[in-house]
Picture 1 (cartoon, rainbow, N blue to C red):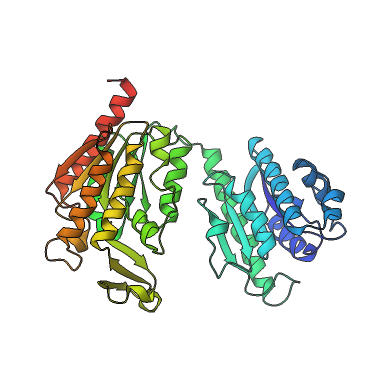
Picture 2: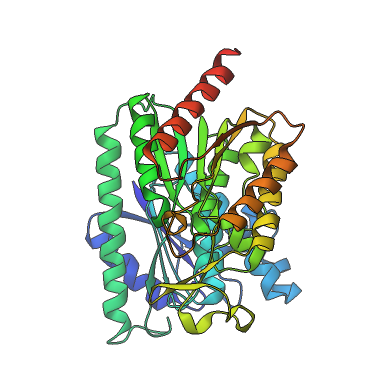
Length: 412
């Protein structure tokens, strides 16, 4: 088994040689892959830059002659991804490690995001102290901040790179051990559920019920990346069903909060025909960062400082109606069995009677717009006076999803 160590050997040869030797010292094989296009080839690589370019359907001289660094990086990223996927298909890959600045990190992201969850992926990057969402995507990439630029082996970088080598060696060894031991085939169907802190009681209750019914439940934190990851799993056919109790990311997308999952949220299961039960969990709020970051136009709104890093804003009646309409329209397009569970007693722990976000008029506007959008569709509606966190509501939603999955499987 081998660790694939890849990056621009034409500019970072010393750093890659340093890390390679440390990984080898720990008893692992290294496949060194050169993705450099700027200058002469670096030290001897197991997969040369020319071979990487060829794997991308081009050639190295053409990329160099084009003088378009962005295009060249994209091509080398595609080539390195093809190399990694081929190594993985042959059962040779135990982990991947890359070192880079912004360009090298973008190449690494293309490769790492294409590899399966569970395979160790470590990126040492100068960009790791900022917004890293583009590098992580919906994969399990591990990021390590390089502290100094990756430009030579010095008293600081030596420690960081040595830690990186030890980390990937340890992760790869553990991965090999799991693979060698073998695991029993997972015969439980997978169900995805969405959760927020303010809907945790509901999701915990529903999760336990679904586990009793024989499902493995994957819970996703509805913080943007969680919703995107769940959508990707649904689109790729990994899920037997979706219990989307917490659709708060739609509110952030509509109003301009910081936890949007993008415009495609609540579309993958609908398009793929995956059975789904959807609710209105945490649609009473929009998320911002620290209190000082709340946009000026929202200064007079109902705000709640959740913690030093998160400020919540109560959605208005007009906003709630718009959000409900969007949710209803997306759900109405479902190609498979779908149901909307309505908790008129409140959408979150903050929206309970007497709570700081309790606003019956706004909730009613959201529900009304959703029901109007569903009118005439095949989507079932279960309209209750319960609160989203009531155990009865959560268990009923879980049971209903089970029925939809069984109906889809048995055609009845």
